[in-house]
Image (tube, rainbow, N blue to C red):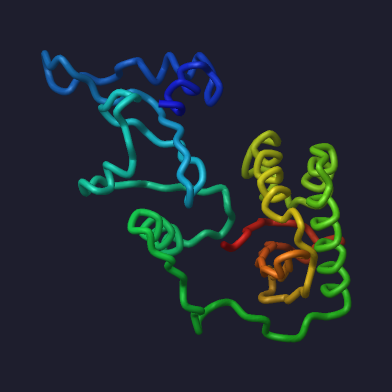
Length: 226
């Protein structure tokens, strides 16, 4: 009910989108009283984050993607994360739906470093990691924007509008509060793993940065593992 009230109140999507959500589109057969397609639903999930999904033929007040899954309907998921495999998407969805902690086994076929990183790559990795952690530690959207604009690869910047990037960086900032860098590993030719440790609890947190070795190192993606 809280979600619906915020949706109808224009706190989640614009009033124009609300109008579209409640607009019937294609009649379900000639003379049928019902229609296919009532636009879009935005819904949060405690494990999977925020969902923006097609509402099918149900009204927005009764739609629930988890109910659809329970009844065998197809869920098509998309993510702004670069290089995200379909297997990983299915694993995460399945784990959330059945309350399981599923993890991929490391593949022997995964992309590996064919030679030790040279001095330039090491310098670029350190530069990018320091820039990322310094800016994420600050509570400044302007700092985040500067990082995205100056250190983001073109394909990363184009993944989302700046407001979308800033929203994700706000979540990163909240998630990594109280953590400090423990160690850095170059885990692939285009991947950096940062192991973070919480100052009070000692909890470890893995942050994975996608990068390319252009200029002084460009950011191509960010993932924070649970």
